[in-house]
Length: 224
Image: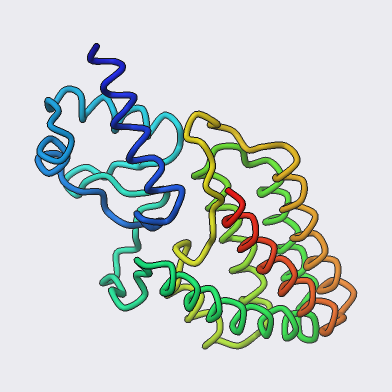
């Protein structure tokens, strides 16, 4: 009975993480709050959190708490960037499109050979990632490498401020601990198109590939 109750709590919390209600890097409610919310024992809540850790959806920092997908940076959090409603998430995505399409174009025009190699390494890491936490980290690392190659410190700083919370995850079933093959292949292909355009030093193609990827990400989230 305890195991099934823990799985139910884990499922509900996991769905909040995957649909963005609990954003990447956001701290989960305290153990006491979860006990009260779910009318469950501490042992049930602890087991649920452990299951989420095993699935790569939560990380725990000693003395700080449990965080969704990736722990926040040590710097003070940017509360104004926390998108809670669908409208706020849409606005955040629009900001990301404006930022990253220009980053991709500039990266194609300015990248060095070393920066192109770093983008390729990030692409390889994304191809290897399976659990949600690893996928988010690899995905963000790819986009950060593109912003870094833009040679615009402000674009890179803004992307760092946004952090992984800007990434859009599909509403997947928590039981699906590893990525769906077809969806993963599509995501990888989109990232590869961006990298290829940057490698060819084609700003227009890089910008278009980034815009197409971000539009597809939004569509995948809507489709679940």
